[in-house]
Image 1 (cartoon, rainbow, N blue to C red):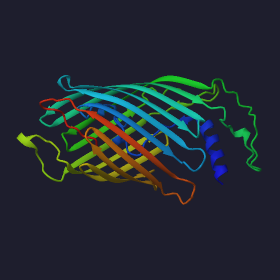
Image 2 (cartoon, rainbow, N blue to C red):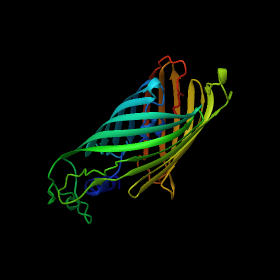
Image 3 (cartoon, helix red, strand yellow):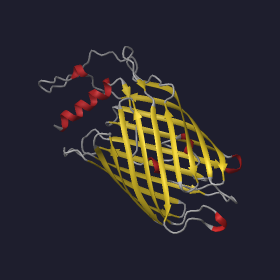
Image 4 (cartoon, rainbow, N blue to C red):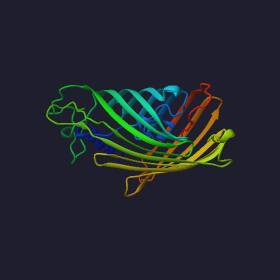
Length: 324
């Protein structure tokens, strides 16, 4: 059964005419990955490293690594960021590499109220391994796998340029409401000359709310957060016929962070996620465990590790540092 599932996944990956983005369980700890406008929202130099491993027991595990750097230029009310992501699907059957540059601009609407705008330009390089399987290589009646295929693959790799944009409304250290559209030009990303394969638009809407457990206002009326607060976040993503709803809650009592969340395809709850984290000086570390609700005992779980390092610049009136 596990072998059959592996084969089906390989064939589907090779023949599917639409592509789906890699994803993380909690984009709130993956800097500016959910919306380009959130680049620089730490108002500091921020270095991020994120790793995800999915389906470790099936033999076709997925590995995703993302490295990022972003910085806010407070006096100019703008931000810059760069990121690199590597997605290794099914032990190298398809490898996706993305290098992205992001620019963000912040508009102050009123004291403590901001509008953030962001644009992203990416270069993708997709590499297809020698073990990519096509439908004519599998005999569905006997289960036999044939070494050759009649399919003609023009190129074993493909590269293209992509653009995305987003916006967010922020009430300082209280509320964030945002939306983004990825793959504005829906670029072609296939390796088969006779079959179109495009990277469809991905639509994102998200919301984060923070509730300080200690006090509402900081010194001199500033909207600072204490070291004890709760958070609620939600996000909805849609790409072609893939829909995902995310909702999570948690609490931060410095230096510890804990949270729980769920993912749904709008019909069923597919995943429950559990997060534990801690901070030590400028370093933040998070571990996330995904528990899939499938009845099949097939290794349906995933692990994520995230590290964020903050180099705080001393500003007289810095922007809010919000990671949720």
